[in-house]
Length: 234
Image (tube, rainbow, N blue to C red):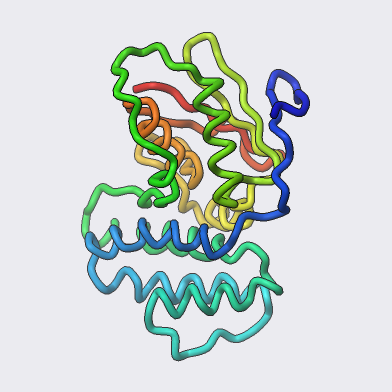
Protein backbone atom coordinates (compact mmCIF):
# COMPACT_ATOMS: atom_id res chain seq x y z
CA UNK A 1 0.00 0.00 0.00
CA UNK A 2 2.76 2.45 0.97
CA UNK A 3 4.94 2.93 -2.11
CA UNK A 4 7.71 5.27 -0.97
CA UNK A 5 8.51 8.33 1.15
CA UNK A 6 8.84 12.00 0.26
CA UNK A 7 10.69 13.67 3.13
CA UNK A 8 8.77 12.43 6.19
CA UNK A 9 5.59 11.66 4.26
CA UNK A 10 4.45 8.13 3.55
CA UNK A 11 3.22 8.05 -0.03
CA UNK A 12 0.50 5.63 -1.12
CA UNK A 13 0.54 3.81 -4.42
CA UNK A 14 -0.54 6.10 -7.23
CA UNK A 15 -4.23 5.91 -8.10
CA UNK A 16 -4.94 3.90 -11.28
CA UNK A 17 -6.25 7.01 -13.07
CA UNK A 18 -4.94 10.51 -13.74
CA UNK A 19 -7.98 12.48 -12.55
CA UNK A 20 -11.02 11.63 -10.42
CA UNK A 21 -14.34 10.78 -12.00
CA UNK A 22 -15.75 14.20 -12.89
CA UNK A 23 -19.42 13.17 -12.69
CA UNK A 24 -19.02 11.59 -9.24
CA UNK A 25 -17.11 14.58 -7.90
CA UNK A 26 -19.60 17.08 -9.28
CA UNK A 27 -22.47 15.11 -7.77
CA UNK A 28 -20.69 15.46 -4.44
CA UNK A 29 -20.51 19.22 -4.97
CA UNK A 30 -24.26 19.34 -5.53
CA UNK A 31 -24.80 18.37 -1.88
CA UNK A 32 -23.10 21.54 -0.73
CA UNK A 33 -24.71 23.69 -3.42
CA UNK A 34 -28.19 22.59 -2.35
CA UNK A 35 -27.50 23.52 1.27
CA UNK A 36 -26.23 26.93 0.17
CA UNK A 37 -29.33 27.43 -1.98
CA UNK A 38 -31.50 26.82 1.10
CA UNK A 39 -29.55 29.47 3.00
CA UNK A 40 -29.34 32.17 0.33
CA UNK A 41 -32.37 31.40 -1.83
CA UNK A 42 -32.72 31.22 -5.64
CA UNK A 43 -30.16 33.99 -6.16
CA UNK A 44 -27.43 31.51 -5.20
CA UNK A 45 -27.77 29.09 -8.15
CA UNK A 46 -28.38 31.98 -10.54
CA UNK A 47 -25.08 33.63 -9.68
CA UNK A 48 -23.22 30.34 -9.38
CA UNK A 49 -24.23 29.41 -12.93
CA UNK A 50 -23.03 32.77 -14.25
CA UNK A 51 -19.67 32.56 -12.50
CA UNK A 52 -19.05 28.92 -13.42
CA UNK A 53 -19.81 29.54 -17.10
CA UNK A 54 -17.51 32.56 -17.17
CA UNK A 55 -14.75 30.55 -15.48
CA UNK A 56 -14.84 27.72 -17.99
CA UNK A 57 -15.30 30.07 -20.98
CA UNK A 58 -12.00 31.71 -20.10
CA UNK A 59 -10.30 28.33 -20.23
CA UNK A 60 -11.78 26.86 -23.40
CA UNK A 61 -12.23 30.09 -25.37
CA UNK A 62 -15.89 29.46 -26.17
CA UNK A 63 -18.89 31.64 -25.49
CA UNK A 64 -21.16 29.79 -23.06
CA UNK A 65 -24.75 28.97 -24.01
CA UNK A 66 -27.43 31.34 -22.82
CA UNK A 67 -30.14 28.75 -22.07
CA UNK A 68 -28.58 27.21 -18.94
CA UNK A 69 -30.97 27.97 -16.09
CA UNK A 70 -30.50 25.13 -13.59
CA UNK A 71 -27.58 23.57 -11.75
CA UNK A 72 -28.31 20.25 -13.46
CA UNK A 73 -28.01 21.89 -16.87
CA UNK A 74 -24.78 23.55 -15.77
CA UNK A 75 -23.27 20.25 -14.65
CA UNK A 76 -24.29 18.60 -17.91
CA UNK A 77 -22.68 21.40 -19.90
CA UNK A 78 -19.45 21.37 -17.89
CA UNK A 79 -19.14 17.61 -18.28
CA UNK A 80 -19.64 17.97 -22.02
CA UNK A 81 -16.54 20.19 -22.13
CA UNK A 82 -14.32 17.85 -20.15
CA UNK A 83 -12.37 16.99 -23.30
CA UNK A 84 -11.30 20.65 -23.50
CA UNK A 85 -11.18 21.34 -19.76
CA UNK A 86 -10.52 18.07 -17.87
CA UNK A 87 -11.23 19.47 -14.36
CA UNK A 88 -14.74 20.95 -14.73
CA UNK A 89 -15.38 20.60 -10.97
CA UNK A 90 -12.93 23.50 -10.52
CA UNK A 91 -15.55 25.72 -12.15
CA UNK A 92 -18.15 24.62 -9.60
CA UNK A 93 -15.80 25.05 -6.67
CA UNK A 94 -14.66 28.52 -7.76
CA UNK A 95 -18.24 29.62 -8.43
CA UNK A 96 -19.32 28.43 -4.97
CA UNK A 97 -16.65 30.54 -3.29
CA UNK A 98 -17.33 33.59 -5.42
CA UNK A 99 -21.11 33.43 -5.03
CA UNK A 100 -20.98 32.88 -1.29
CA UNK A 101 -18.48 35.70 -0.97
CA UNK A 102 -20.88 38.05 -2.77
CA UNK A 103 -23.94 37.05 -0.78
CA UNK A 104 -22.32 37.01 2.65
CA UNK A 105 -21.70 40.71 2.29
CA UNK A 106 -25.33 41.34 1.36
CA UNK A 107 -26.98 39.08 3.94
CA UNK A 108 -24.53 39.33 6.81
CA UNK A 109 -24.61 35.55 7.11
CA UNK A 110 -21.50 34.10 8.74
CA UNK A 111 -21.10 30.96 6.64
CA UNK A 112 -18.49 28.96 4.84
CA UNK A 113 -18.55 27.08 1.58
CA UNK A 114 -20.57 23.93 2.20
CA UNK A 115 -18.65 20.68 2.40
CA UNK A 116 -19.03 18.18 -0.38
CA UNK A 117 -21.03 15.07 0.14
CA UNK A 118 -18.49 12.41 -0.77
CA UNK A 119 -17.60 11.72 2.89
CA UNK A 120 -21.08 10.30 3.40
CA UNK A 121 -20.15 7.09 1.66
CA UNK A 122 -17.08 6.42 3.79
CA UNK A 123 -18.65 4.87 6.86
CA UNK A 124 -20.05 5.67 10.27
CA UNK A 125 -18.54 6.99 13.46
CA UNK A 126 -16.68 4.38 15.41
CA UNK A 127 -18.54 5.16 18.63
CA UNK A 128 -15.27 5.25 20.56
CA UNK A 129 -15.22 8.61 22.34
CA UNK A 130 -11.67 8.21 23.60
CA UNK A 131 -8.92 10.27 22.04
CA UNK A 132 -6.78 7.28 21.06
CA UNK A 133 -7.09 7.19 17.29
CA UNK A 134 -5.21 4.88 14.92
CA UNK A 135 -4.38 7.47 12.28
CA UNK A 136 -2.59 4.96 10.09
CA UNK A 137 -5.79 2.93 9.88
CA UNK A 138 -7.98 6.02 9.40
CA UNK A 139 -5.89 7.45 6.57
CA UNK A 140 -5.40 4.08 4.86
CA UNK A 141 -9.17 3.52 4.85
CA UNK A 142 -9.63 7.04 3.48
CA UNK A 143 -7.23 6.32 0.63
CA UNK A 144 -8.81 2.96 -0.19
CA UNK A 145 -12.34 4.41 -0.15
CA UNK A 146 -11.37 7.43 -2.24
CA UNK A 147 -9.67 5.27 -4.88
CA UNK A 148 -12.64 2.89 -4.99
CA UNK A 149 -15.01 5.84 -5.48
CA UNK A 150 -12.61 7.36 -8.05
CA UNK A 151 -12.25 10.52 -5.99
CA UNK A 152 -8.63 10.27 -4.85
CA UNK A 153 -5.88 12.49 -6.25
CA UNK A 154 -3.32 10.66 -8.37
CA UNK A 155 -0.73 10.99 -5.59
CA UNK A 156 -1.36 11.27 -1.87
CA UNK A 157 0.76 10.96 1.25
CA UNK A 158 0.62 11.68 4.96
CA UNK A 159 2.66 12.01 8.12
CA UNK A 160 1.68 11.91 11.79
CA UNK A 161 2.86 14.54 14.25
CA UNK A 162 3.66 14.12 17.93
CA UNK A 163 0.79 16.43 18.93
CA UNK A 164 -1.76 14.02 17.41
CA UNK A 165 -2.27 15.98 14.22
CA UNK A 166 -1.78 14.57 10.74
CA UNK A 167 -0.56 16.27 7.57
CA UNK A 168 -1.64 15.36 4.05
CA UNK A 169 0.62 15.93 1.05
CA UNK A 170 -0.88 16.32 -2.42
CA UNK A 171 1.85 16.69 -5.07
CA UNK A 172 -0.72 17.90 -7.62
CA UNK A 173 -4.23 18.55 -6.30
CA UNK A 174 -6.95 18.40 -8.95
CA UNK A 175 -8.57 21.58 -7.54
CA UNK A 176 -5.48 23.71 -8.08
CA UNK A 177 -6.78 25.69 -11.05
CA UNK A 178 -9.88 26.77 -9.14
CA UNK A 179 -7.85 27.57 -6.02
CA UNK A 180 -5.40 29.72 -7.97
CA UNK A 181 -8.29 31.77 -9.33
CA UNK A 182 -9.82 32.04 -5.87
CA UNK A 183 -6.53 33.21 -4.36
CA UNK A 184 -6.07 35.77 -7.15
CA UNK A 185 -9.51 37.22 -6.35
CA UNK A 186 -9.01 37.00 -2.57
CA UNK A 187 -11.97 34.63 -2.14
CA UNK A 188 -10.35 31.93 -0.01
CA UNK A 189 -9.89 33.65 3.34
CA UNK A 190 -11.59 31.88 6.23
CA UNK A 191 -13.06 33.79 9.21
CA UNK A 192 -10.01 32.75 11.27
CA UNK A 193 -7.69 34.32 8.69
CA UNK A 194 -6.42 31.04 7.27
CA UNK A 195 -6.96 29.80 3.74
CA UNK A 196 -9.98 27.79 2.62
CA UNK A 197 -9.20 24.35 1.22
CA UNK A 198 -12.04 22.52 -0.48
CA UNK A 199 -10.63 19.09 0.28
CA UNK A 200 -9.55 20.19 3.75
CA UNK A 201 -13.05 21.22 4.71
CA UNK A 202 -14.60 18.02 3.43
CA UNK A 203 -11.94 15.77 4.91
CA UNK A 204 -12.63 17.27 8.34
CA UNK A 205 -16.15 15.92 7.93
CA UNK A 206 -14.75 12.54 6.94
CA UNK A 207 -12.49 12.49 10.01
CA UNK A 208 -15.44 13.42 12.22
CA UNK A 209 -17.54 10.60 10.75
CA UNK A 210 -14.91 7.90 11.26
CA UNK A 211 -13.44 9.04 14.60
CA UNK A 212 -16.44 10.60 16.37
CA UNK A 213 -14.44 13.78 17.09
CA UNK A 214 -14.38 17.31 15.68
CA UNK A 215 -11.45 18.26 13.44
CA UNK A 216 -10.18 21.45 11.85
CA UNK A 217 -7.44 22.14 9.30
CA UNK A 218 -4.90 24.67 8.16
CA UNK A 219 -2.95 24.94 4.94
CA UNK A 220 0.76 24.65 5.59
CA UNK A 221 1.87 25.04 1.97
CA UNK A 222 -0.08 25.85 -1.20
CA UNK A 223 0.93 25.48 -4.86
CA UNK A 224 4.65 24.89 -4.35
CA UNK A 225 3.57 23.05 -6.61
CA UNK A 226 2.42 20.59 -3.93
CA UNK A 227 -0.06 21.35 -1.17
CA UNK A 228 0.26 20.34 2.50
CA UNK A 229 -2.71 20.52 4.88
CA UNK A 230 -2.58 19.82 8.62
CA UNK A 231 -5.60 18.29 10.39
CA UNK A 232 -6.01 18.48 14.15
CA UNK A 233 -8.55 17.70 16.86
CA UNK A 234 -10.63 20.58 18.27
